[in-house]
Length: 276
Image (cartoon, rainbow, N blue to C red; front, side):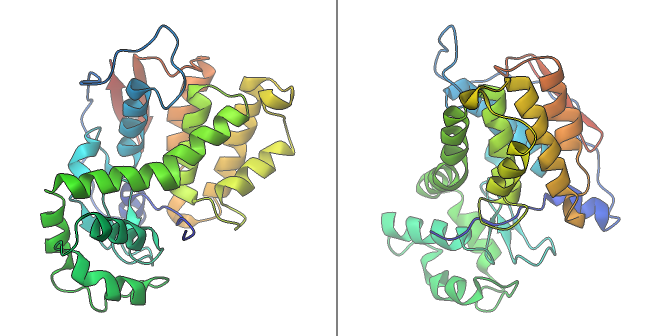
C-alpha cells in the first residue's frame, strides 16, 4: 500500500495564488437516502453520519456540499503532486491515484483509464504528466460516469482514509465528532511517518492529553488533537489557513456536539454552510 499523500485543498491553493474565488452560497441539505438512524449513532460509520462527513470535507476541499459531483473532477493545482482528482483528491504523484486505477482495471479490464497504468507508475512520486497528456483528464471525466469507477473511488476512500480514521477513533474511545477530526486530518495529511502526518499529529497530542481509552476527558483530548493539527497545517504554506479547524471542527467541539448531530452551521475560508 502506498503512503497517502499530504492534501492541499484546491480552495486554499487558489487563495494562496491570489486567484479570484467566488464564495459558495449558504447551503442547506437533508441527508437523503441514508439508512434510518438508531437512537444513538454507532459512530462516523453510521450511514447518515458518514454522509455528513463527506459534506464537511467537500465544503473545505471543493467549496460545495455536493461531494458526489466530484467523481469527475480533475486538474493539476500546482502543488507538486501532479493531477488531483476525484472525491478525495487522488493524486498522480502520490500513489493513491495509481492504486485507484489499478483497482478499477481489476474490476473492469479494458476500461478507458487502464491504458494509463504504465504512465501512472512512471510518474508516481513526481508532478510529471508524461504519458498522461493530453487526454487523461478527458478520459477521467468519461470514466467518472461509470458506476464501477465511482464505486472504486468510494472503496479506496474508505480503505485508505475513512476506515483507518474511524478504527483509530473507536480505539481511542472518542465519538462521532472525534472520529471526524481524525478523518479530516488523514485526508489532508495522510498517515505516513513524516512529522505532519496523522499519526505524528496524534503523537504530538499525546504529549498534552490522553484520549478517553487511556482515562482522559474527551473534550480535553480533542482540543489537544486539534491544537496539534493546527501546528501541522502551519508547517506547509498551502495549509496555513486553518479555518476548517477554527470555524468548523472547533465550533462543534465548543458546543459539545460530540455526536455531530444536525443542525450544523460552520464556515470554511469565510464561507457559511448549513446542514439541517
